[in-house]
Amino acid sequence: MSKVLVLYYSTYGHIETMANSIAEGARSTGAIVDIKRVPETVPPDVAKKANFKLDQAAPIVALEDLPNYDAIIVGAPTRYGRMPSQMAAFLDQTGGLWASGALNGKIGGAFTSTATQHGGQETTLFSFVTNLLHFGMIIVGLPYSHRGQMTLDAIVGGSPYGATTIAGDQGQRQPSEIDLEGARYQGKVIAETANKLFG
Image 1 (cartoon, helix red, strand yellow):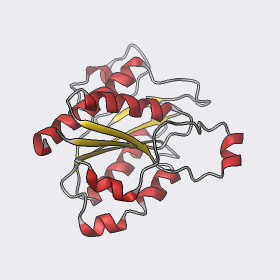
Image 2 (image 1 turned 90 degrees about the vertical axis):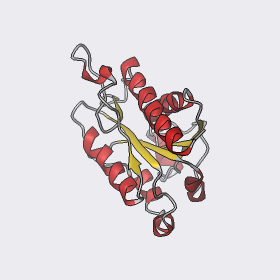
Image 3 (image 1 turned 45 degrees about the vertical axis):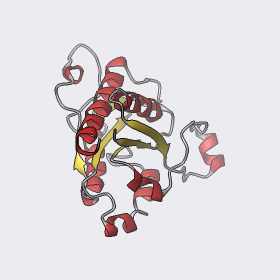
């Protein structure tokens, strides 16, 4: 079976929750799945004062980990319609992997959250996808076969470009069951694709 990395940054825990659901979906295919996170770059006292969720179980990723996986699914909240600096700082260190082609042909995907319904979910996903394409990765999103993203009966995340959730302007909204279903679905589709190519 394929090896899948769910790589994330989460300020308040919303993306951590989504990452666990992505991993759950990927594991349902028999894939070997690891969840790791990028380092926090905000000074500890500032992060603590701002109530960042600092007690996350996932270990910190190392650059040399990335080539060991057949698929990498990257997630982080939006910052002004793009990925946050914590994730960008990590990806900005991958020049050696890019130069060597270490990630060429691997499967990639992305997921995110925003405070509001129109807070830049799709542009943030594209900011991830741009990086993954530069690595030579094959992108898999959240297909419309996940029908939950099309409902008009509730506020939901979801985009053909990747699973999403809406956190609220104070972080008060946790991912809904439909959002988590979308995350599981995307994880499953990416792992199934990786299993076909690498399993």
